[in-house]
Length: 408
Image 1 (cartoon, rainbow, N blue to C red):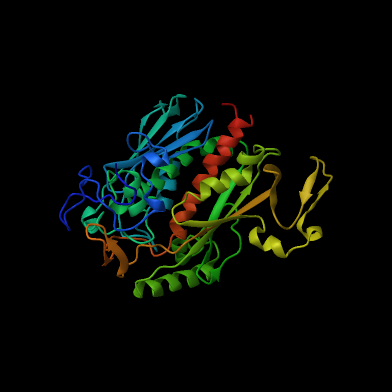
Image 2 (cartoon, rainbow, N blue to C red):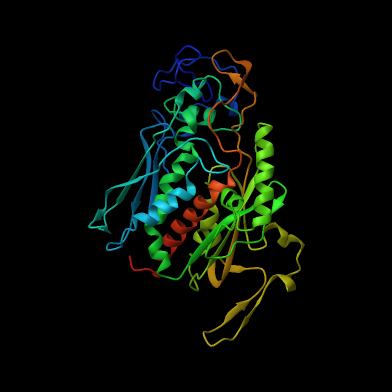
């Protein structure tokens, strides 16, 4: 009976990872949750499967690994007859792609292959299969895995959960590389949301000590630094770029925040309670790799505001009641109020930094260290802008289909 936390590959140290060769169970050198066995966790006869699915009526399932043949997504529930704009899809991919500005040096063309669900450049109503090749993976940078798991990474928990079968190179199936499939899926479904007049715009609103105002729709990057930082404010962007360049010389990383404004949501969009606008968006956004906090409207600043100042009033207009407020209360009780919805997602400093970090050598139980040599982002925000927008597009389209705002 295999005990949680004591999975060790049956290989010599320094050899490339080869899944499936698991050593016999043995007495652990550390204790996890009273050393509960897999069966005691409710999994009979092996390890439970894992799902990476977002949405109900419109569902996107991610697949692939960072260093496998490809990553991608499966879109289910896509209505038929939606035109495919391959230029728009590639533009979205280029916005997420690493290797530009402040991103990783890993170079991927991210050309999208639509393997099913498309005929004559329109959706058929069948599931749409998206495939994106991995062309620049370098697994040799991770030869220390799984014996020396990286701190602040999912190496050890995933190794345990998969019974040692997971490919951990480059983060495996937990890598931000998988967001490529998400961004491609969002680009395909976005015309459905555009048809409602919904606008979703994000940019980097904070990086370290530097902050910028909220983004405006019709995004442009006014300077080269703004394009690198993915920040609409030229002055803030220049300060952000200089700050990150300084940290790169120190072989360090920095936290960031992506700010998003959603406009044009029809009144009432969103489900009661657990699938309201904020719960649904919050659950999805907290799945973005490196996410640490999500805020809506005033967010945590609301604790310092009196009730009389926090809410806006309804006012008559020719088009019906309008909510007038300075705090962007775009959702009330989980449903759209037709006001702008402001969302902020805080991202931690990237954990993969080229400095020695403490770890434990699983084969011996002794203290050790690991230095990550892979190609990594010094900050997550710039690449996260496209990912945050994509998450929002998928969630909002699903809610719109469920609420009858879009014909499914």
